[in-house]
Image 1: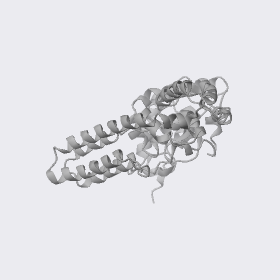
Image 2: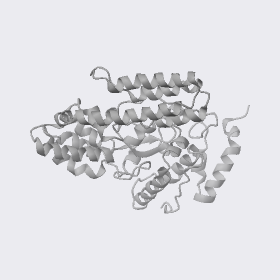
Image 3: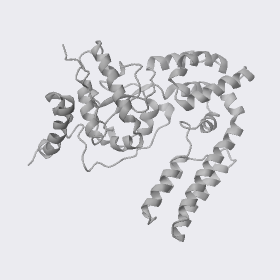
Image 4: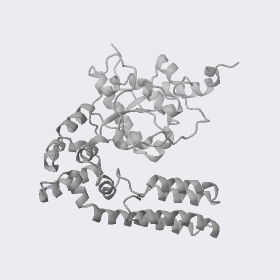
Length: 361
């Protein structure tokens, strides 16, 4: 019987020889990175989309062997490039949020520089609105401005549905009807005034995905899917943020403004694909990017976010600087081992250089 290592030997040699030429890979890092039961990406690997939890339920602690990576602190996110907060920062926000918007704004002002663009714009709106009604809290302010934002959101949603319908006009009549049944149902949800009925973006996207076997023109279905996925979310649209959080508690809204900016442990090889809880499989990544990637294979994720190529190199440069200055004691191997894992899990799309790492004393 051929051992697992033997099966992967041809792939291992090609990948590691390239890594050796570019990054002077060490033998110990090479051995670990090529073990098929740890980080090797199988050619048979398939994308598995697990149900995403609510953003506010993201966990920042509890993973084994993660403290050395968490010690990187206010480093940039290797995906989006935003400087990240620490869990200590998040705890400070949670402890010092006041009972009114103005009280909470004083605390959040210290962390505004870490906010993502949509959250920062929402925060600026809350500042302006709180000056007009200083006695209100975040929830009351969002509720007071929900109606006009809902109208804006519905207009954006219907514009996307119009584009999907327009694309479907190039399909055979029976297939057009399948698409328009989905968009019609979605329009009814978008325009419903019943508070018990809420439009679910994921449901719409899943319904469109379910048509893949029934649509004969695969390229056209792919275009419709691309359009469907532009439906606004609370992470990329201010109106969607206001509408979603207008019925949430004051403190929940305050924490949400910064929670996506907190550094979380991202498994380079997803746990659903057998990725281990080990520093060689860890990146420190902002909660927003971690949540959005879920279990998408790294190569596919890089295709969707090409900026990650540059941002991951910047991240690694900062890691190396941190280690060269005495940080991550006992984990001098981290940059090279993670570079190996990134290279293989991304199908070579993330070819990260670690030349600046000083020899271990």
